[in-house]
Length: 490
Image 1 (cartoon, rainbow, N blue to C red):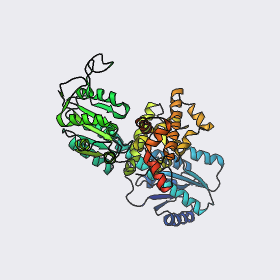
Image 2 (image 1 turned 120 degrees about the horizontal axis):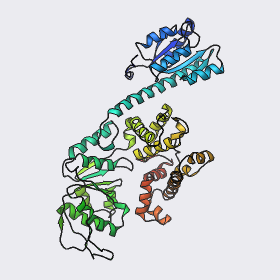
Image 3 (image 1 turned 45 degrees about the horizontal axis):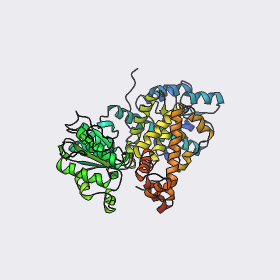
Image 4 (image 1 turned 90 degrees about the vertical axis):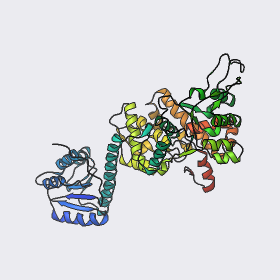
């Protein structure tokens, strides 16, 4: 028998089917469920009648008695599960045993209730089952969409906020316009840059990426513009700079706000004149590189502070692409979760792993200050550490207080021992770093400069650590204003 296509999501009220050979029980449950659960209710007095109804409709929940004359509830449960695993089934019985309840749950029943039962309790169970089925069907349809989804360069989602960004990228990709990509940490700024490059007529050439904060001023200048032999001590041969390597291609200046002012001046010349001057050379060299810059910082504030040149900002800000935070595209959450889940299931050899609807709902309700990158790391950690074949809420739960991640109780230590030494060490280091950075920023109310000074790091090195571990200074400034912790200040 051919498996029916996935049913459409219910346009109106959800549907509950009640199956029982006792007419009084049928009608009593219909009155209670229809009134308390705000759903449509259909009745079946036998198991075979229920199967006949299932040929024409797909209820969200089936509440069935076990003992019926033609087809008992356990066999009906098996047939429902074969037909559509998203239907939540509740088994009722007046003479149940523990063995019978265990078997029903093993066969896929959501709950097992003994008659007589409390009406309020069955209403609560049915409400929960209605929500469970809705999530499962949403997930199934989203997975089907994900299989057919064609988006540029690793983007996953269909939210209006993401579609707006992708439309802008598509319109400016095949031009020479300089693009400034702005957005919080973890929103996919580098993905946007790669999409701009891959959709342009420069895609045959390799895109050059420069991690600006990672290089000290003297090294950054020589890396960008190159140098001649003898230009400085240690320059034993000519070196071609990254701008020259990006000729006829695209160069991404990642975290442009951290470029020293002296280098900003020379960068401005490249944008204005389309030429570079290697260190130690008097002549200039023409380059035809498309410049894309990214930042998660407030450039206007840095201009007012004298830390960023206004004329460079205007040269960079020809077209601005603003990457939306994850909280502004929550409708993409299930797609992203499934995307990362499938990736890490394959990567870590866990093909049977699934995510519980409750875990998905929990993820949907979080604020995600680290955005898509934080969600990605959460799913990866869950795939690595989930003890069974279902990712539960406890597997994806991240404490509101980042300092809690530093603690390593016995159960967590046992989970870490399931990893290789290097993976476990990396996990512990990440917890420590998040807690340490958070404590410093909390102490200085989000002032990065003061926090970096206290711990003996350069400001840029401290910022690199923050980006690596998804820690945002705005979280701690927000705490000072509101007295709450663990929320993103926007």
